[in-house]
Length: 236
Image (cartoon, rainbow, N blue to C red):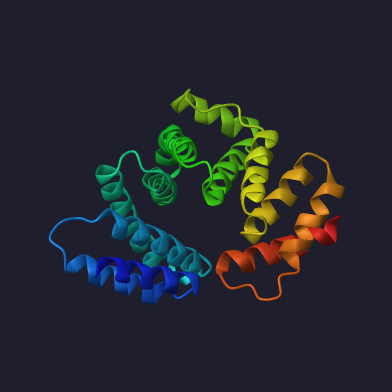
């Protein structure tokens, strides 16, 4: 019964039917007396995808916050159940980042080293997951793009954050793309943005064109990638 539920949830997720997958998994969870890791990590995955859709609409900020806190609880429980599973660390890092983003800059800064530690652990435990490498790349990209005074402020709270560079970010985005080419338009966008930051516009263009020329963007992330890539291409 459990296997069939997971397979159905996976199929719904693959078809971008996030709400249906979520409701199926929540119903399955309610029927059990003990926590179930396979259900929990799938809930993390679908809740994150649902949150990305809500994030596109500022009027849904309260719903988004509630969903992120819900996802964090699933991620925390999954990590407690399977502390050596890559998905546990990946989703814990993702939801901790999202949660602290709601709670304010100081809390986000205080948790940066924890987020990074779990992202690195996720890639150590499963080096074949392109999305984990993408998230790690985006973490480094954001740090590399901070102004000097922002970096100084971070170091007043913690000394555990590396001196991130765009070269670091590029390496992780490239790793994701090598593992599964064309898996995520947002990775194409980030490759383009990173090459631009490194003043290599010629290398940026092919990736930006891939993101911009999607024929059927299916998610909020796909649409964001398309919109931002088109804007950057106009500037090249």
